Amino acid sequence: MKIAILLGVSKYAESKNDLPACESDLEFMQKLLNLTGNYEEIYSPSCDGMTASDLKNSLAEWIEKYSKDDKKKIEEIFFYYTGHGEFFKDEFYFQLSDFDAKKRSQTSLTNSELDTWLRGLEPELTVKVIDACNSGVPYIKGDNNDASRVVKYLDSTKGNFENCYFMFSSMAEQPSLQDRQLSYFTKTFLDAVRNSDSTDTRYKHIIDYISDEFENNGDYSQQTPFFVTQAAFTEIFCTITDDIRNLEYVKLAFTPTLDGTNDVPKNSSLKQLVEGDGKYYVGEEDALKILASLKDGFEKYAYPDDINDLYDME
Image 1 (cartoon, rainbow, N blue to C red):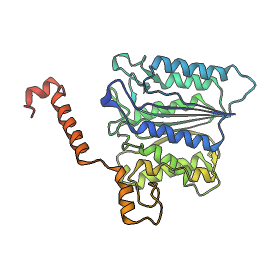
Image 2 (cartoon, helix red, strand yellow):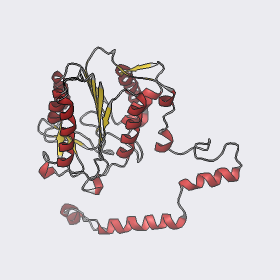
Image 3 (cartoon, helix red, strand yellow):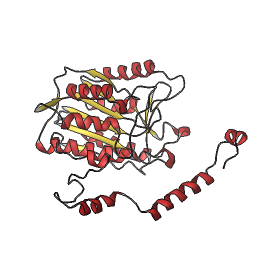
Image 4 (spheres, one colour):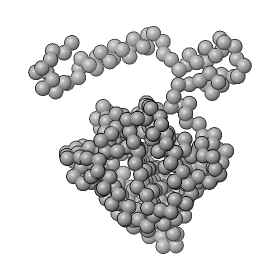
């Protein structure tokens, strides 16, 4: 049997750390896995607003029920995470909704803890897809941080599993980017599957597709995904169906087009097209309210003392 764990954190205790695209990341990754029909159960709790303690307890209980079921062999465990992450003192932390740097261990899920749980299931294949996106902030950070140390740590974790594919959205010193609707790395993973030119898509094909996209797409030049593998490169992610090829997510992530995808009938008049497209915009009054709220926010913002000592704010 195959099972999956999908975690997405888009709202944090400090709203300035919110990641708006992560909610969509999770939604479309779950849709994709459901469409494959491969997974007997997909555990995907609502992480936003859920304390780290409650989430970890719930996750532990979910894993335990499979640990106790000796009759069902775990062929594959698929783990996906989108949200903030941090590498600190030789440990990787998945930062959960109530993350507090002063309570780092209590408000995060560590990679070591996750590995212990997954290893206990004795899966034949373990897959991790980590899109630790920080909207332009390096997602792996910490004291004396450097790329080689992080890669060495993550590479060492593969020894915990018989076969594995680990996919990470960027190197240690790089940002992991998103727009307001979708993270670049997750979008490219979805593209790799949907645009596959073969009936059965292997994990190695997904890795190759992502590598080529980030190598050749100038918009993605700030980040370089990296991969840790210990497998035969023959393992299949899914069989491509028409429903998978037609999975629609691009129109939600980027500018709507006037090709009928915005609920305006084809062969419409110019007037109908303009009116239909108008729902994607706000009027002058609403725009002015938004600008006024931004001004109010800047005026109320508490700047650090060292900034106040150097500058007068206007």
